[in-house]
Image: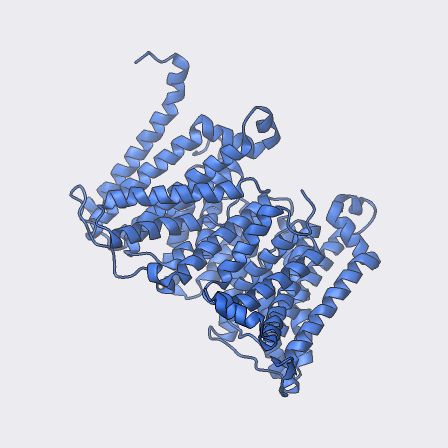
Length: 326
Length: 299
């Protein structure tokens, strides 16, 4: 292997740093149950891992590329259904079923994206929403395959993988944490790569990007497809958590949740959407304990963010603290 | 899928009349909501995600007003006027703060309002379904047209919506206010520079949009049941109508609303399980052929 010129060595350093941060985060998360077992906390992390992947993948489009998709929940739901169906109907091992589910999601995201990415931004938002609603109505009406509005019930066969027994909550926790951290790390690399820079250039000035020889629709389609794939991965984790798949996973409010997570955390910070997902989940857990009017509280919180802060938490901190956390 | 049933229906005048009527009801109510969405988008470039909430609140207020006054006409009027007022308050208090910020901020503000008022409705009117019932004046035997059954209330409802479509169309093309609105849709800064009070104009646009949605909610209350969250499906469909018709075009909204109404009316015969899916397919197909919608200006 050739010695790298110094400039690439310097450029490689942020990647190393991100990997180190991810490793530390993973070790901390994996160590917590060794010190203290708390089913509620482990549940939270499992749900967060699915939601964080979902929201962060959406932000590859929203924050990086400036494409506001309202239909991202489709790929989350598709990942969950594809995975759950393969687990129930075939004897494939869990990793194979998961990889196949992500691949199916990727292919569908590519096809949907190919139709949507050339539309202007308002129409893009609505057509993605229409595709999601079409997918949702297919789930509802294709009862023999998907169980209709009841969802895929009967649980997933718990097959052992690599010594992981996913029926155990601890193992599921570890599995989800590892998959989510690796997934986020991969997304981080993508968004920091030259391709990620290209996406930000398109967001900031698409005419200039086009003059520089970038084929806009191709870059957008790549972003759409990658985002769909990672949302599908999030959906696989969600299916593991609920032990099946439900139409709600692919419904409009779920896309809304991802958009809120992105906005609450901050669209211009890589970890913003994951933080936003954590805030939303925690808010949900706390508020539903005190009142059944979750929507009312959530609405007021969102209003406070949108009208007072006017940006997400991490973006706000970034502005408030010079050289603040990334 | 049941194409035989669809074929049989299309060759029976009675079935055609009945399904056309139900399609017209759906379409006309949808038009009232979508006209507001498209008007607000045309002038303010805001996609009002809270429009379904106006529709829902209009229905509930009419329900309460009917209980208080025993007059359906007053109920409809109060639903529409209350929502016109609500629209102005909503625009002044919240939307005016996010003019010029990105679409996501506007979406968040609107969706927050949707969440809040879905719960407010639950608190005030309870989470259960309410049925307003047919107003006594319309509890008369239905009309029969070519063997098809048409309840008189349906005919009146279609008539009112058609009247409003005409008034709105003429108002926009003939009156001074309408011309100002159309000018503001093209370049609101220029209109402001020419001495028009655009703050007032924007509030009026929201009042008209909110009032139409409230009217639709009040008119729909006797035919559909009231429930928290009922605004959502109407919202999605009115967006589909707006997008198919071309955002900002009232005529487009009318044509698209009737198209969606007919797809619903006849789709329930031919594809009872998949009527919703059919609508999305129609939308996707039209947008692929004409990305700016049927009557939209290319951007």
